[in-house]
Length: 155
Image (tube, rainbow, N blue to C red):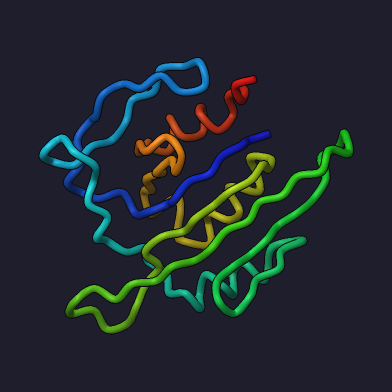
């Protein structure tokens, strides 16, 4: 079961490896911007708000509101209840024909497969993603994020 609260963005082209951070008992490589500070998330994902929303409607046990809030719930085989909620944010860069998905806020606990289903709605795996941990204030690449989200929460 994964547990997290993050913002998901398209991974900017202009990123570097950031400092290693101790999180949930493990060491994780972070992502930094070109100057060493936080990455600049000015890019967009390859889907529109409406396209993502339609894909969310197709997921099992998913409720999606017109304002972009959505909720998925379920039970594992062991009958453990899980929930994943999110909020969609779009942005229209200067010169673009229409707005695209800019950010996806995700929070909760869910099996890996359900996270994958949600990420596919924004164009993953073709679109490489960055995961900004809300409480920790760091950004991780997908591999490090999955390891972090699967790590035990501190007691």
